[in-house]
Length: 165
Image 1 (spheres, rainbow, N blue to C red):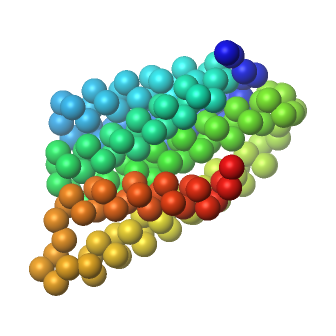
Image 2: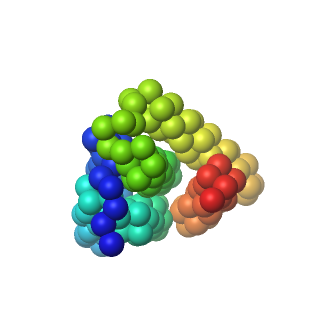
């Protein structure tokens, strides 16, 4: 079922952050394909105003960050891709909600910008906290798999606490 299209600013932020997540996660064939497919699903959901499709696309981008961390093993890949995926997911969902409640044209830029900024701060703080935990967890250094699994789990927990829906 199609919903009301979200405001263009929300669409733009969701798609730009989704592109960052997909590009950051494109460290091998599997994560590149997963990132492009997830970005396409997110774009369809955000442009058409279909919440469930946008959720699947956002979750796919977060999954892409995990796969990229497993394939590449560099912490920086996960620390960039995962927060960008969370911002894309949340901007898309918030935009759809605004479109449904107040209409595409009635939603002002200020509330959208504040919401995205708050999400970005929470995502960056969660990534930083997970990275600190990763760095201090083991005496010999934790394996990259630990961060690849820890960071998305931290995002899911933070999103649940933040959104409360």
